[in-house]
Length: 265
Image (cartoon, rainbow, N blue to C red; front, side, top):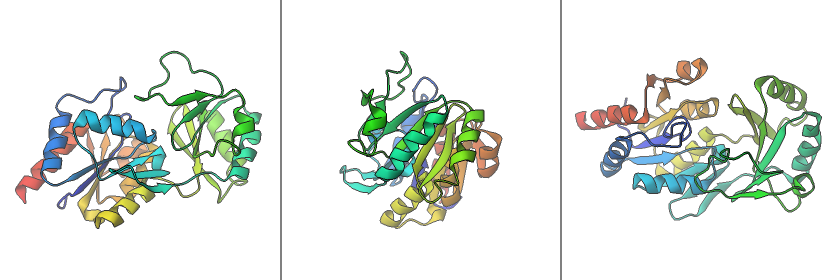
């Protein structure tokens, strides 16, 4: 591992456990990295306000925040560096085409998630609940609501059908990525955590050898492609672990290794 200046870290299943908690001791090692001159940056599928919430818990403010799986980048002054939306016409066609499957569809724009009906109690995992119940979601998407992400709830079998049926039709317009065994996201074409990381690296004048990525899911693989060094969580799917440089038990142990490397230089 070269001298690390920038760490890009996923939230769910990585920095946060299943109960939305940060592991004991993690805050201390992240702050130590921050005080040593490093930049700890969160890259997540969540909306930006949840990153701000977590940063407040950690007692740091990253130079940039990557939200909605790379579709939105904000700096620590809340200025928008990047915002990618699905074109209105494409979004309207997607809403119609997805009716072929019996799946729940939610949509997000830069500030809110829109639900066709309330989620079950306890299912909203966000720290800041910005959800809006919109029974007329199909009619408003692409008109009053400019979508960044479609979130589909189902299973891997249905997701395979959706991708097989729609990937070619929407090629060049949107991409399909599984963010868990039960959720499929449809994003603007070319959007990923990795492409967003590259944009922040340009701003920070950081090269890949100075960057470490930490994640646990398929949507973190693009981070691994960009970073010079990567950690996968031990519970990650095998394909994710194989792509990583090293497999670790927690973000705390990742950051401890990075701090040791900094001390040895």
